[in-house]
Length: 281
Ligand code: ACO
Ligand code: ZN
Image (tube, rainbow, N blue to C red; front, side):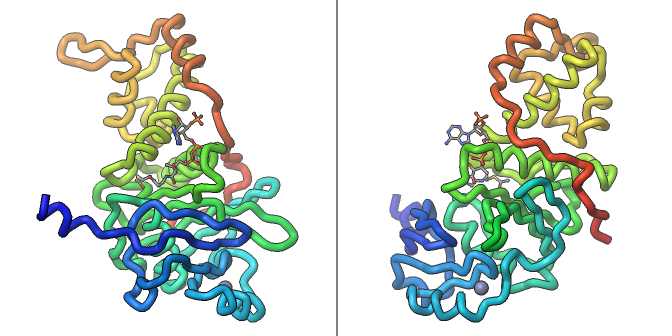
């Protein structure tokens, strides 16, 4: 127990102000020491600089000229926009985003080099600017075929389908790269629920269309979902049988329909025709 206590960092910042929200934090985040005596931090919602006092933020807002995340807008559909930020070109922004995200991510060690990552920040836009609702990060080059490192929907925006939208987006990027991808492990409970939901929905829709006559390899080619994740998902849905040393899909139409009903709503769709992006080189 003693040992455990030593390794469990105490949560320092209890709330943050971000745009029009005051948000209670979930976990410890390793802000620079001079911020650690603050219970509350004030974030500029556009450049993500953080301050200890409200007056500092107000002064900052008068001179900060950003109205959206730095970087390229690579997707716009209605009021939703996605921005791609290169951690090497916008180091401070990348670091600020990591400090912020760690407040809601338990088991992630953040202090990799932000240089090595791209950040995909999803915003709801109006006449005041583009307000961040969530993001995911992605290694520029992953040996393990990870297509997503960390994912977060800010608490005021959770349970509205943004998480599944971000996950779908990460797979659309993988499709454009012509690669399969998988999220970095470990997944949090909420991360696992969201991925399971996404995988289940996507795979069931295709199985239904093909009346089950399709292989795991073909499913993987169509969806950019790694074969292991497909096998695990279909196994948990009891759609896999092991015959003559091979896993085969057995998708009884009645079973499919039952699962599809239980899978719930599809969530926000990514309209691929609105994604303007070429892979990182
Ligand atoms: N209770 C029960 N189920 C939940 C909950 C919850 N509080 N939140 C999400 N789910 C499940 C549901 O099945 C939901 O689908 P449904 O609403 O159709 O039933 C599904 O997850 C996804 O819901 P979304 O609304 O699409 O996802 P959301 O925008 O809430 O974001 C996310 C999900 C990103 C995991 C969010 O909960 C979050 O930011 N959590 C904190 C950070 C975190 O844990 N990130 C993942 C770490 S793992 C990694 O980064 C690789
Ligand atoms: Zn600012």
